[in-house]
Image 1 (cartoon, rainbow, N blue to C red):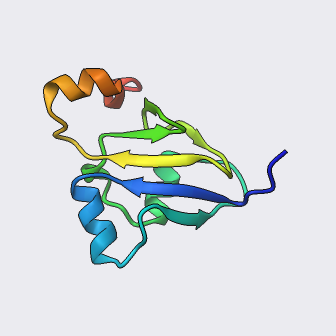
Image 2: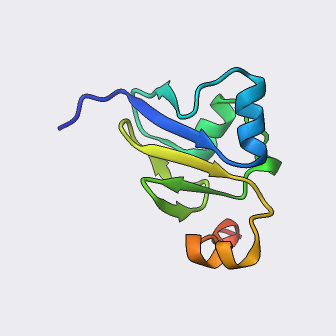
Length: 99
């Protein structure tokens, strides 16, 4: 079992601009001792919720309510990803699953 107590975090498009403005590396290693949701991780990083449509966790797109564990790779994706890419990346309707 891995003893990695970090998650690797990336922000794409507009969110990458926020990373750059804050001087964060890309990807960024964020300490994480126990499971949280992607939404909780976004709050901890002070990423504006309205700028996040979906999240990739270990390469799989899903809603922000998904769990994040130490050792995971997390990518926050903003709204506005062009149509064909939305389908290829699995983003179609991801933000609406719990509504």
